[in-house]
Length: 114
Length: 112
Image (tube, rainbow over all chains, first blue to last red; front, top):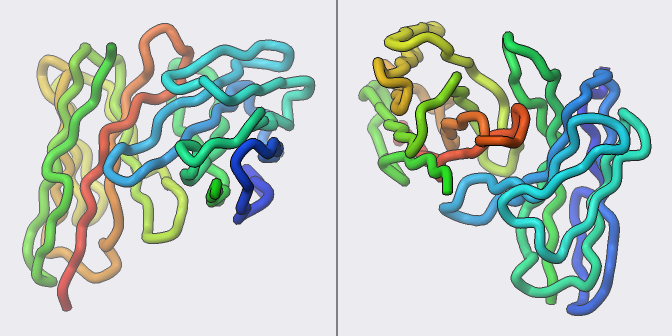
């Protein structure tokens, strides 16, 4: 069972370039989300999805787009990379319910924008 | 907006000493979760607390959820070098399904 898979693990972009961070999960989770992690700031929610075809903005959505065409995949698109988007990006999935709602995280993508 | 705060930000301990991190939310939480992130790794779920005043133990780790469901703590007894990492608390984000609002984390360093 692979869990949550993110690609690539590392990426260097030039300012103004665009790219897509890939995220796939094989646990049939309805909920998926993207977080960015910056030193001393914990993880901040960028965008999330509660099911295929449904997406919504989190705390820091500017400069990012998402789509959710299938339950398994939730790609994050950087439209025009800026140095302020240098960060570690984590994709997570979880099962909606009133019980245990733990989030399963991917290995992360370390992005540097120069 | 909703905020989750953790203190301390960093903690150095000698192996064998105890360690505690504290978490405070600006809003009442339906539950609180704790995660551990090893250096260079990804957050890994440790536990979820749901009930007011709940206390749960996992070996040397003790988790508490406050009576008002706005604060929580994680206590590690007799730290070991394997406890090194950053510990995060997280609560459900208001009006965002089960998405999480994370505290800033407490980075634990253990000297052997």
